[in-house]
Length: 335
Image (tube, rainbow, N blue to C red; front, side):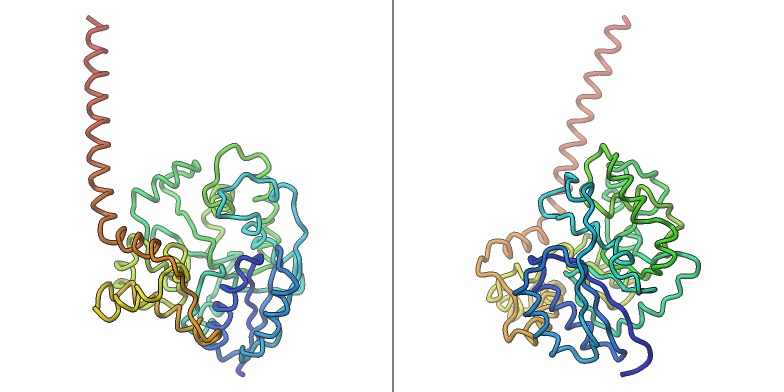
């Protein structure tokens, strides 16, 4: 193995143990340097810990996988958040507190595969910034979606909105900036609904110049609205983040049928890429027997934009109608 040891951190509970294994394997397979993996344990059973310990034997270059439970915060544990999230999402901000011996770390969500040597991200110069993160609007989301997201949480429209799914962190600067404490204080007094809990909180209470915008290739969401445009602009992704469109929920036979017919080559290509890694560690790809989520996904790929366009036209027509009625009412009152 070459050079220094690269520190990679994950934060998860039992639900994400299988996804963690795929992500960790993809990193180990493509990285020449030694790797140390740090897991902030937010509820991993002893059974899954033992399975991961056995799984480590399949990871070339991984010197060890370290588990440690974070110091839980009552504020985060009781925070009202959407059902598909858990309080675990906040503890990515506590990596430095959970593993105080670390000075630098790459944090990854579990629903990623790393298709390149992770050293490419590790070597990014942060300058005086405490961490690096993707700015979503340079990436995949439609301008109106970004605008709606900012308005929802009260962020000025001229500011950027960052994604917290892939982070490069200088832990000393991160601690000095009190990032964890500031987010904790905000959540404790927050009176708005946080759709993406820790991500919204970070965007609201941190200054936009506190993070370094990283190349979109390091956090590429293939099924996001403008992903194809981003793919053409920046080139092949290095870290693929399946934050929308989950390969393990797709039906294998359905996908292979599309592949044989050469339909949806772009989407099928990314699904198969994920399955390639999962197949190598398990002898079978994660997939779903239920074909309905797969059909719904491809239906949205075909008709989603049309539905959005029609809904927008109808909505605008209704709004204009109400405005017209109110305008006439106002004139009548004035008369």
